[in-house]
Image (cartoon, rainbow, N blue to C red; front, top):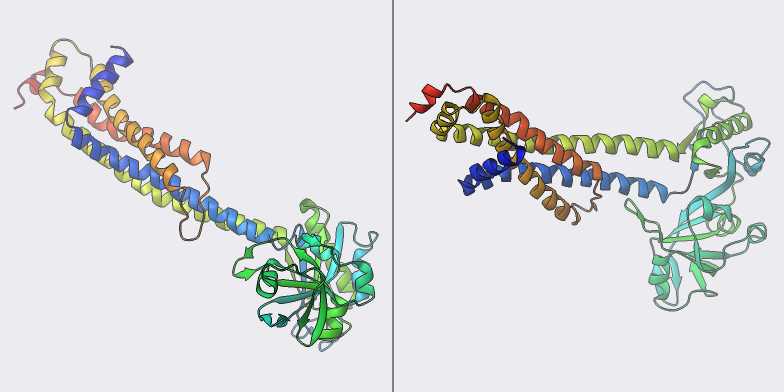
Length: 406
C-alpha cells in the first residue's frame, strides 16, 4: 500500500467523526499557538530591555562617585574623600594612558524648573557635560547646533533641549535662539535634540543639556570634583579593557587599589549580557509552559486514537483476515494520528502568527522563526509518539478476536 493510500484512509478515518477530530486538533492548535506567542513575547521583552539599555549610550562605562572611602581597608586615609577631578578626565582622555577609551565626559546632573513665557516644565533633568556626551549617550541634534568645546571653556549659558521640553515650553513655536529660565538663571537654546524615547520609567526626551561649567556656575556650584563620568569605549569588544584602564587611573589618582575604589562602575556590555541571560531564561520558561499545552494535546490525540481503534476493531479483523500485514495496520492508524496533529499544528501556526501581532502587557512580541519550525515539528512528533501505542495495539490484534468483537 502506498503512502498516498494511507493518507486517503487517514482522511476518511478523521472525517468519519468531524466534531471529535476537530476537538482533538484544537488541543494541538492551542499548544502550538501558545509556544509561538509566548516565545515571541519573551523575544520581544528581550529586545525591549536591550533597546532601553542601548538608549543609555553606545559602548559606555558610567563611573559614579560614592563619596568617601570608609568601611574598607585602603592604602589611603579611611576618611578621605574620593574624587574625580578634571586632571583625571584629562588622563583618561590620553591615548597613551587609556588606548581603548574613545571619549570621556564629566557629568553634572540636577533638577530645575524650566520656564519660558509663562510655561513651565518642573520635571526636566538638567545635565551639564561636554560635546562628547551627546555621542556617548546616543543623543543627536535635530535642529540648531550642538554645544561646543569653546562654550564649555568660556562657561557660556547655552543649552540643548529635548522634545518633551520643547512641547511643554514652546508648543509649536521655534525654540532656537530663545532664552529659558532654569531656576533663576537664563540659558539660550541653541539646539533641539531628536526624539530618543523612554528608558524604563525615565523620559529621555525631558532633558536639558548644557556645558558643565555653566551648570556648575549657575545650578550646582563648582566643587572641583565630579560625581559622574560617562566613558565611551572604542568598541564593544574592548569595553572591558577600557574599564580596566579607567579603574587603574582612578585608583592611582586616589592613592588606593582598584579593589578598594569607592566608585560604582557600570559597564554597558555587562548590563546587556545580564539582560540577555535573564531574557533567555524567561523565554525558555515561557516555552516550557506552552510545551505543557502541547503535551495535553498529545494526550488528547492518544485518547481519540484508542477510541478509534476500539470502534474499528471488526474492520481491523477483516483487513487482517484477507491478508493485511501488521505494518499496514500500524501505518494506517499512525498516519491518522500524525494527520490530526499536523493539521492542528498548521492551524496553530496561523493563530500564533495572528496573536503575535498584538501588544501583550506593554510588550511588542517579536516572532522567532525557529519557534514556528520547532512548534510544528513537535506537533508532528506528538502525533507519532502518542499515536504509536494505539496504532501498535490495533496492529497486534488477532484476526479471530477482532472478528468476534461486538
